Image (cartoon, rainbow, N blue to C red):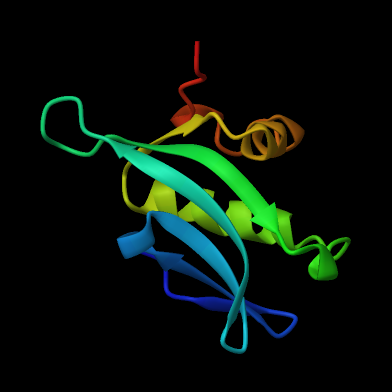
Length: 108
């Protein structure tokens, strides 16, 4: 699991108890990407990303990209695979072709 990191004063962290990765400004969660864990045989094998959002007041700063990169790096470090149901996560992976291709199982 990745340790929290800071990007331009915003903390990026994993919140596994909420099944999401978060952007935090001070005490306020200002963005998140949500996932569900897939356990086909009782063992977690995938993080299925289902939704990403950043507060409008923080838009245009590239924070969603920072958040998703952090999350996908963490999935890699955990030895899991990625299912990108979230349109933003899917688009990010396509834009950064080759970076996570070895971990992605595209939804049908």
